[in-house]
Image (cartoon, rainbow, N blue to C red):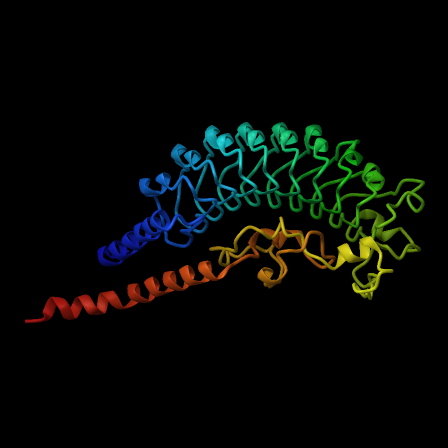
Length: 367
């Protein structure tokens, strides 16, 4: 980056922070500025509630960030952060946390001290295990840790009675805890592309379960009471690309064994008082899961990411689930007008960067 462009960028960052201080803004948006070090001035903004630092060049999270005790949303995804400070547990008001696409490998056990946390994303972080302390996050509604190297789910995680959305696709999980039914609020479970061998029978006791994704695993048989044990609101169980897919005759419309098999669809009039509760859930989007801000496309294309383009601003008041939402995308689907403006400013910087060399040539030869 040229010295002039760097000067403009750094001064704009400081201007954003100074404006937040002067106007006591609750939201500070500093994503996509190639920030390598957070300006110390930011840590004086103790009143802010939303801090967006995704898509930068941060290598560490300064301990001082935990002085921002009013934070409810913190996005650190798409950086180069290798460790979270233990003091992260001091952010008792934090509701949304996104640390995806950082080379973390390990989550500090102090994550369990985030007592208000509702949505937590740690996709593609090289995570080897989920810390057992996650079981202390009693308000957790949404947890995503896809594309890691997780081999098992800690039993402590089954204490999360409010967890509704769980996505652990593209990991190395072989077995699930036998008491998954303790997670009584589960609505959507995504275990695609793992190494699960036994069908998770305990999940069939979760009466709120609507969608269970188990494709690309190693399941070769179903429990004897499979057809009679399905949750009453269950819409779909995806068992494609398992050994059982080659030997089972499909006689249950709610179970998908093959690629060409049609999945049942539901035409529901939400205005009708006779609409079922679970049908209404199937047409809504979880606001908590979608509350985190968007990031641009990954620097390196991620084959896990599917095509989706939600305008969440029009549906963020919704409280439940939508049957076509792929959980692998839920942490990257929010962008408000302020953030769009900042991203446009970042594009402006890029444009300046393209013309500066030519301008400097003329400046150096001017008489």
